[in-house]
Image: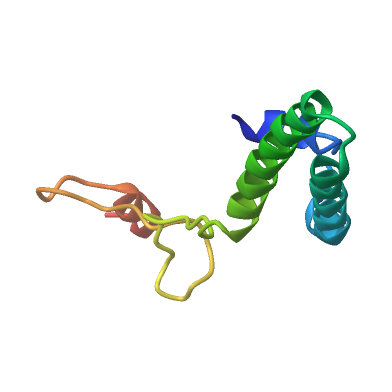
Length: 104
C-alpha cells in the first residue's frame, strides 16, 4: 500500500495535513470495530472485518509516515564566515573558483 492509497482509504486529500485528523481517524476505527462486533450476521461481520483490516493498514502507514526520521541535507559546506555560496573543493593543486576570485 502506498501513502497515496492510505490517504484515499482514510478519506484524506493528497496534500492534506494528516496530524490534525488522527484523533477522528482513531474514533472512526473504533466505530468500524464496533460494527464488526455488533453485525447482525457473519457475512456483514466479515465485510466489516476486511474493511477494518484495510483501515488499520492505512492508519499504520500514515502514523509511520508522520513518525519517520527527519530528512537531512548533507555534503554542502559554506565559506568560513558562514555567509555566501558553498565552498569549492580544489584537488591536486588545480586552480579552482577561489583562485579566480583572489586573482594571480
